[in-house]
Length: 232
Image 1 (cartoon, helix red, strand yellow):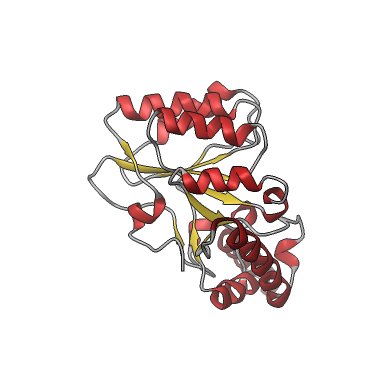
Image 2 (cartoon, rainbow, N blue to C red):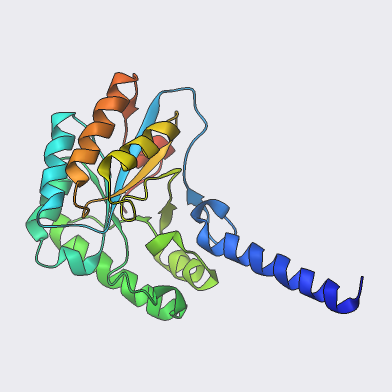
């Protein structure tokens, strides 16, 4: 094999590894992420990203209340602004509030650690001003991690909560397909990722909740599932 071929193989392998390390939240290469637990208990957690949404989040909260389910909501600061009462309701009804950055910018992953930290601090201060709690749980936009984010999270003393069941509800336009995808992957210790902004979000949550309860599972908050403190 020629030297050029060897170099090309090395480049391909390194590129593939870096892609895996950055774009798979459970890789634990740059940042440790809590994505699931090994357990025999039929317990799972359900989480929501990107809210609060003025229409969908209240509807989802109604469904969660119907089944007496406690969840975690990873909120974007710019979406919190103007929806403060919804955030208060999330907190008051016993759900966990986590950070999903302030801007959720497409370019967030290209920021310096300092600018990432500034963004996270802005989100934290806004959430604190509304619920009186300093968040400790964080979910990276798109699940992407890198060395810069690792530095920012260390400064903020944040814990990354990932997932083991990605519903792809922002991609799939058919709610039933989302439900079936989630159903197929339900197992003890799993963490479901949904978004409280999709067209059929509340219907999807209702169908999933009904199925999970019928299978003898119990929904628990991520802090309970992983035995972690959600707030400082």
